[in-house]
Image 1 (cartoon, rainbow, N blue to C red):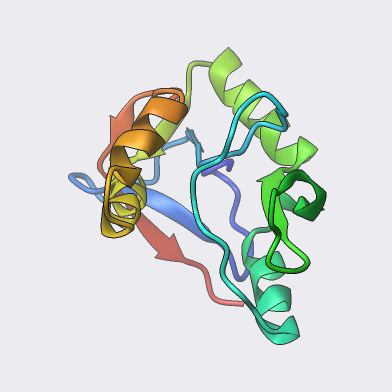
Image 2: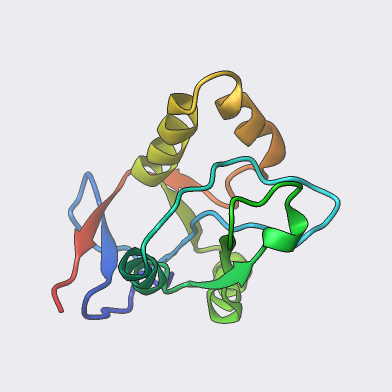
Length: 145
């Protein structure tokens, strides 16, 4: 996401130490559309209203039906893949050397995989690319609608 943009109902990030809003692009997880690899995670049933809220929250992603790719789909199954616009912002951040990752976000993702138990955190790390830019102490600021 372009951290310089203020979008009602969305968010931006400030530097934890200075309280300033850096002119960076903040990267989040994305799933590669690649039939030769697996995605580790879990399926969670949702209601239509919950799915609508997920679609609104995941505004930098596109929802893709993946049930046909699963050995035993639990029903209609989707994954969220980065939108072309979101991926273009990531490319711009890389091109301008302003692509970063927020440490609290990365920590929350790793904590979620650790809570899945077993070796899920290790599997996540082994199946994921390293952060695409510096990991910074950034705090999320929600923008009201």
